[in-house]
Image (cartoon, rainbow, N blue to C red):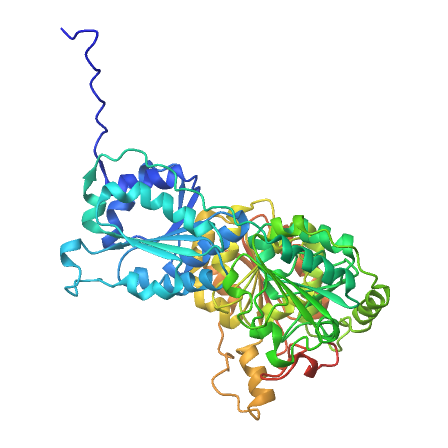
Length: 566
């Protein structure tokens, strides 16, 4: 008989497989959806999925899984998760991982691999995915002991979401998935110490703003990443400073705000680019002087002093010297700034006059569909519920120029990488994340066909995504450059043998219809938005239509080319 003074026996944790520990670790992180595709080296994890609390979405290509996880993260503001097997499954994730790295999107990518004893033997479907992805992840692990899985998963989510977010990779050899361990619940990773803001730099920024005569806000994707939309809007309202946005910064300020000059850069508005060239103080909020925004860097904002605010200190001064450098969380920095509102009435009047004078026209002649007008009407009809998942090409630029976005979380696109095929998997993920939103994939005939197989995913899960497919029977943006800069040598851009996309969608079980004349646009938009399930509008547009304005490559933003209706 045990005496009262004897210690109680210690409970022994039930041994669990590495696959089971992975599923439980994902559950512990609050994961609600995982996008993936099974295969031999990840089969133990898929065997364990049947006990998961989260939902698995079976995509039809691993690239779709990575793009979907990326978009899910952008909309929910927490790391997206994708799952793939070894070899081609892992390498098919690479473009999506690079996309997340370029746009600072938190993502946890989990790959299976061959058993540890087979590594380095060129085994079937073996690939060094750690080596392949080293330049495009924040951090990566290859798990050697199943007991390490809970701690690694917890650390992975912390690293993906902290600081400047980005993708991480966990590679799981098959023997680690089937191996067993009794693992206690790991401690939480220590939070990164809060970076103290430089009070001197804050005061210098306030002084520069107070003295400026032509200040300008240059808003980047860091506003979305920092969840600092409210702070940016409050700062803009209090100071009255006009603003321009990068592609990833669109939606941070309301489109209707009179001092919002729209997108700057290669396909930016004339009012935005002229304001940049004329300003005397450029206040950079989470932007990185990307070449598509700056044009010829040496001639970008030539008269301006620069205040650069970014969470990533490595971005400050990387391309343009900053007169005031503030490394820190954008939300915290804006809350700490209390500048005296500058006396800039003439500057505001000039910017507003340019905004009105150079506003795009929508009265293009002819009976054909004018894409900018269609996209403008689409976003207006959808209202604040509108979320656009844009592919890459002319349609991407038209959407950026002419759609209205209630927030930067309503505009999903591959910015830094410019990856075609993003729109369809991104749109389906956004609709899963925000089922009450009017989520529309805006795509082109070139981009759409790259991941067209995800129509099967839409149908299987009845994801009520709407798709606007602008079909000009060409790789439109390449054709435009060949027309303007390559002496009209149209090399390998002809897509006139496209299928009937509406018929293809219907073959997948997706409602679809065709719009080919301007008179059918309004009714088509109404039908699309009212459809109870997934629906595709196949919109035929003029193959010779160009995106205007345009800054030629290697030129200053002051050297914009203009079309009649830009």
